[in-house]
Amino acid sequence: MKIQKGSLLALYAALELGHDPERQLSTADIAEKYGVSSHHLAKVMRHLVRSGLIQAVRGVGGGYRFAGNPGRTTLLEVIRLFEPMESTIELTGTASTAAAPVIAELHSIAGEIDELTQAILDTITLRTLLNAIERRASAALPAAPRASRDRQRRPG
Image 1 (cartoon, rainbow, N blue to C red):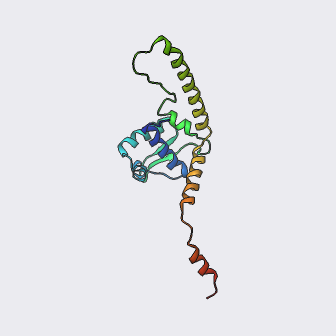
Image 2: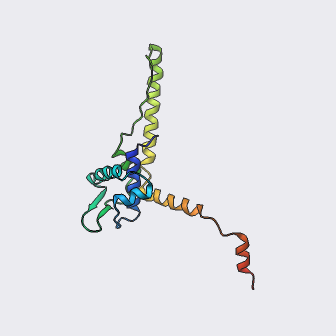
């Protein structure tokens, strides 16, 4: 599965805002954190506002905040706002009569893959993904060296 750039930017924004739904962030804040174009992200943010997933907050200290429930909003919901969730099998050249059954079966398999992919994405909420990201970050932290732990235990 290839996620288009708009969908990826939408996921960055939804995850960042969904992490703390009361917090407001600007497009520049999110773009800087993820190293993406603030211009392209601004277009994505407008689309997310129109969809009702996020709210635009005007005035001093304004920005955007999450309008939904990160525990109920799925990855599929966010991705579907920006791209169709269907495979396309591209075949070059002219298809012969003998190729028709092969092509038909490949399309059928691609449809099954699409259904499975969508079913999985529909079970993963933003909160689930945020929790997984936090666990991965915690696991990546280095443990204290053993020698320093041993020194702390010995009476001095």
